[in-house]
Length: 126
View 1: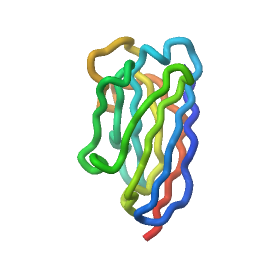
View 2: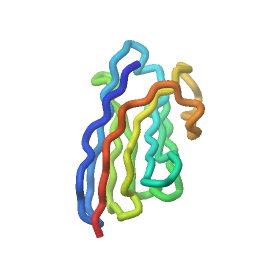
View 3: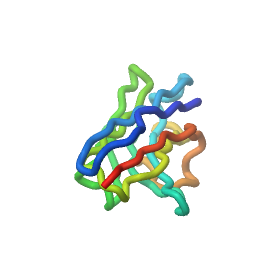
View 4: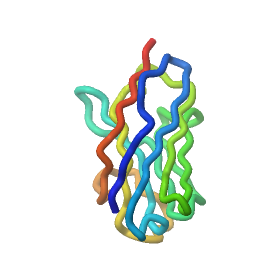
């Protein structure tokens, strides 16, 4: 699976952005997907994840209620809708795919993901 993230940019606090992650490879629709982020000087952290069917989603406490992860398996794409953005959301956002197929839950730990996109920068100004 190859992943290409896009949609980052500069936005004012309180604004919205939608990130997209386009995947190539025939196993996309059977893989859980996740979004992670890494702020300058900080470790990469979990943001959100979604099961292969889209039936279950998981969020970090810091984004719960503001971000929404979704997927369109027909388009081989996973999305991250980000609303009410805050300066502390500034980071490079990465999408990732779990190589294990048809998992019941979507992982929230970095080490459980096998494929990574190149990242897209989100900058939130105050």
